[in-house]
Image 1: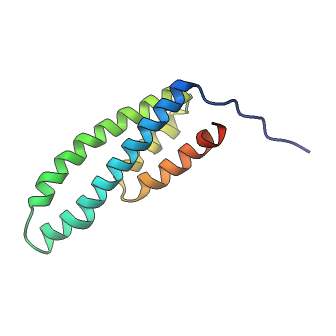
Image 2: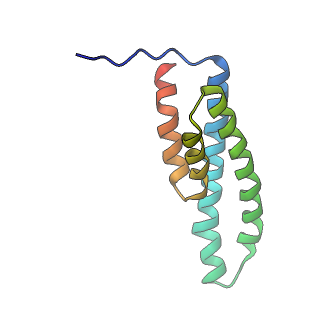
Image 3: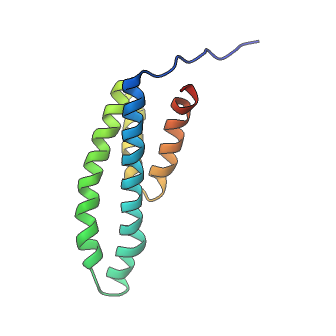
Length: 112
């Protein structure tokens, strides 16, 4: 019978990076949803591009922050490069940043 190795609790630096990442993932996810579910229909169905003009650049700026937060967490928790890239790309697909946030943070939350 094999048992899974006991995971050491995360360091305070990893926990802090995790909290920053979680906030960033939610902010980027909500911004993307507003852009896609409100701004795009208003622009293409209603002919009013105001929401896209305002939320689009804000989301882009926040996404750059999300990339930095993801890189910080990946570095501190010693992720593989492929995992970090997939998590970073999660901020570009509606709803996926929420799924990635839950999946990524669950093992770290369980260890604390």
